[in-house]
Amino acid sequence: MLLSDPNKFNQNSRIRYTLPINFSLTLASQKKTNSYVITELLQSDLHKIIVSPQHLSADHIKVFLYQILRGLKYLHSARILHRDIKPGNLLVNSNCVLKICDFGLARVEEPDQSKHMTQEVVTQYYRAPEILMGARHYSAAVDVWSVGCIFGELLGRRILFQAQSPVQQLELITELLGTPSLEDMRHACEGARSHMLRRAPKPRSLTALYTLSTHATHEAVHLLCQMLVFDPDKRISVIDALAHPYVDEGRLRYHSCMCKCCYTTSAGMRQYTGEFEPSATQAFDDLWERKLTSVQQVKEEMHKFIAEQLQTGRVPLCINPQSAAFKSFAR
Ligand SMILES: [Zn+2]
Image 1: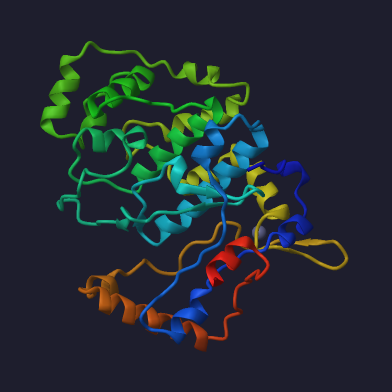
Image 2: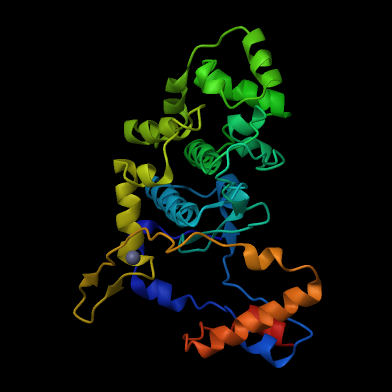
């Protein structure tokens, strides 16, 4: 897939791109035995793009990073931790529109710090140090660490911390960030802390980030360094990352021609939304999900949900009957 140059986006190119989406609204309500969930077509993902020989400009990196942060802000405001942010879970279309997918490991944030959370989360290369060090409880900061790793990967076109094992993973992290202080390891389990203290202390070598690529400008490295912070409590939040000047151009680019929240008037004036990065109106409640105990129940709930959606008068999303995907589906 060839990515557009973000400098050359225009409204027409977006409109031409027709998406077969939410077909399930009609199909599922007709026949209760089978449900088809058809989603937007996003041809590629960030992993495929990073490993491809395709040129990635500074504008590409900015617009991708902006969209990752924008999506995560919404998730975190709904108190959802994704817990598997990695390039392969960031779907991208040819217009550089990016969407976060795969919520298989997502969960609602645990406010009770005494409650244990599983450490079997996040693909190793993108796993935050507190998880690697056996923290019993962790926060939305684990997603920010993953974004930092991806940001570094976009700049350098290679995985930032590519280790063979969790222990080596931690090793690579400390080679860049230096040996953490005792205070920075307060969330770690005793075994991991004493392992770290037995190692020879390492100095910080964050200046190495400037060698990632020519796109690693002072502004880029400044933001990256705030995401790659060992102590999750000192790591930048998504909201603060969105306020960083590095993100401004990505925001402008996105809302100038890629988003669905702003529009261009017939006179050619761009009307911008009042909220560039919306928050959820309320925290996500997974109560309904916890009540589901059988596949049949899931199907019935889905049908109920779809039927309710049909009552709300929502505009059916665009289906392109001429698309190859639709033709092979309808066969
Ligand atoms: Zn917009």
